[in-house]
Image (cartoon, rainbow, N blue to C red; front, side, top):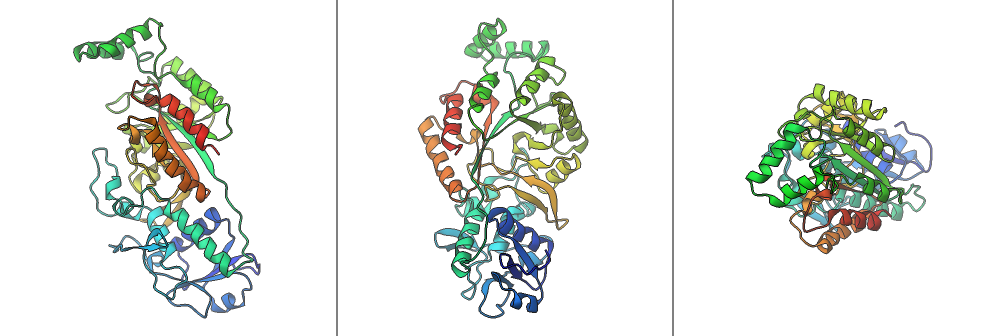
Length: 439
C-alpha cells in the first residue's frame, strides 16, 4: 500500500516489503482490528508521518513504537525453526523479541507461522486418513489448542497501540455464530437402492443388531420416519434466527468412504433443492476426490445443476486437508471459501484463530484467493461424552474465548449424529447450542 498523508493510517516501517509481510499485516490490522495500514522502507517518509507509526525491523530508529522482527517474514521456503514458548501476560507466545521491543515477541511472525500452517509443511506422521494430527501441533503440545491466540494477540496489540496513540482509528468487528450441518448420509434406510438395502438388512441380522433390524423394517413400512431425515426440524429451528447456516451435502458416487444416496436419486435431489430454499447449500467433497481435481470439479458442477446456482463453498470428507495441495485443488475447481480448517476429534483451533483468513501458499510465496473459515468444534469430538452438561461446559469455554475477540464461532454437526440413537440427544443439543451461542 502506498504511503498517504492521513493521520488515521498506521504507518509501518520495515527494511524490506515481502509477500509474507504484507499478507500478515493486512490480516492482523485490517481484517482483525479494522485499522487502515500502510508500509514504507523509506526512513524520511516514516519520520514525517504525523499519525500512528510502528517500526518492524531489527533495531528501532528513535523512540517510536517498536516490534523487533525475528526475520521469518523476510525468508523464503521452509526452515527448521526452533520454537521456544514464553508468555505475554498469561497468553502463550513464541519468537521472543527482547526488552527493547514494545511487544515481547514477534507477534507478526508468530501469527504467520500459525495461520500459514507452517508446521504442516514440516515432516510429520499423518493419521490413517492422511490428516495432520492435532497431537503433532505446537498448539496441542504447549497447551493452547483451545485458545485463538492469533486473535488474542491482535487485541492485546490494539490495547498497547491505543495507550501509545490515543487518537488511533479502528473499526470493531462483530461476533458471529455459524451453523454447519454435514450431510454425508442423508438417510439411514430409505432411498439407498435395492442392493444396498438388502445388504444392510442381511448385515443387521448377521451381526445380531436386532434393534437396528426392527427400526429398518418400521421405516420401510413407513411406520417410523428415517432417523437421519431431520431436515424439516432443522430448517424450522433455523427460521427463528438470523445467523449464517450452511448444509454441506456429499454428492458423489458410492465408494468405501462415500456412502450417501445415489446422485441419480430424484428424491435426494428434491431434498437438496428444498433445503437450498432456506439455507446455503454447498459441497462436502468426497473422500475419492481428495487428490482428484477433475472429480472435484465434476461433483461441484453436478451439485450446482441440482440447486441451479453456483457452488463456491467446500468442505472435505473427514476434514481431510493436506497443505498446500488441497487448497490448490479447491482453487483449480474454482471454490472461493473452505470450511475444513479444524480437527474432527479435538476441540480447538487448528490455525489458532477463529477469524477467517486467506490461505498463504509458502511453496509459491503468495496469498491464494481462497478464504479459510476455521471451525472450533466438530460434534464427533464429543462422542465419548455421555452428559450434555459436560459438552455445554466445553462449548461455554470456547464461546467466552471467541466472544472476547469478536471472532466467529463455527460449530459442525453431522447429520448421522443428529439422527442416530446415542446417550446424548444430539438434536436437542443442537437446539440448545444455537439458542445459547447465536448472540
